[in-house]
Each structure stands twice: as C-alpha cells, then as structure tokens.
Image (tube, rainbow, N blue to C red; front, side):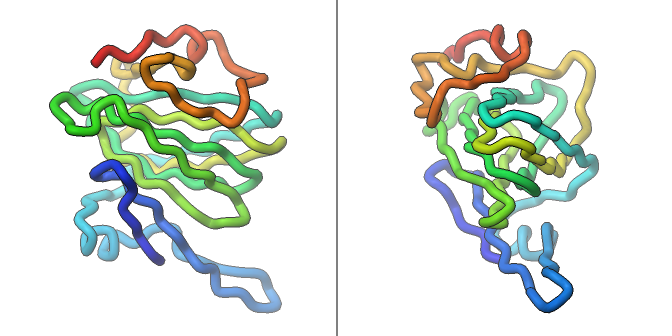
Length: 176
C-alpha cells in the first residue's frame, strides 16, 4: 500500500497492489497504522455502497456540516469514476481549489478525503459501484452541497452529466 499526498493538504491517494494467484487476487483496503504513519487519523465507523446504472451519473458535490466532522475513503469497486474534492475549509490556503482523480476497478486506487471538503463523482462507465468508508455517519440536518458546475469552482468535468437528481442539480454555488 502506498499513500501519496496530492496538491491539497490532507487529501491523499491510496494505491494498492493486489496479490494475485490462480484464485484471483487479494489486497488490503485500509491499514490504520500505515495511515497514522503519514499523519492520517482515520478509523472507519460507517460504510456505504453507491451503485450507479448509467455512464454519466453525477453524485455530489456533498459534505457534512458541523457538528459532524466526516472524513471518507472512497474507492471504485466496479467501473470507473472521475472523482472530485473541493477544499471548503475556512481559512485554508487552498480554499475553493479542487482536485480530481480517476478511480476504477482496474487501477485499485482510493482517495482519502478529510473533513472540510465537498466530494462528488461522475461515472465513466455503466454499472459502476463506489465504496465509501466514513469516519462518522450521516447526521440528519447536517448534509450540505455545492453546485457541480459552479463557474467559481471551474471544475473540468470530462463531460456534462447525463443523470443527476434534483437535489444535486439545485445545490448553491460556493461562496469564498
């Protein structure tokens, strides 16, 4: 398992190398001690699976507001996604900046998203499954979001979404 910093403090990619044999493969999805060694204090308390039928499905940009401090480890188990995080931390030197990472069943990459970030993804293939490991569960009344195509953010999505629900289409713009 290799953990690498990205261009935004606190956000990391996690690369795993499956051990393969005639049965298939096995690889570690999470290692608390290895995370701690690079300064990530993350213990999953809840997990979720997002199944997406169609290529071009957009989910996000979501975050949890105070008092919930929710970090997440995101990985694609089937298919591929264009995964995006936006720094929304007050006082952060990179507030309003975003990064994207392609996560897929083939590349076995994961993205660690600390609390204080909006997160979303666009599916790049049909029948895409995304696994979330969360540091805290969802709390009623604490869900927030940002509009996926807010010009102030300027996210370079690979194409416009083909499937998006009403809530995600109506999130407000980012205010810096």
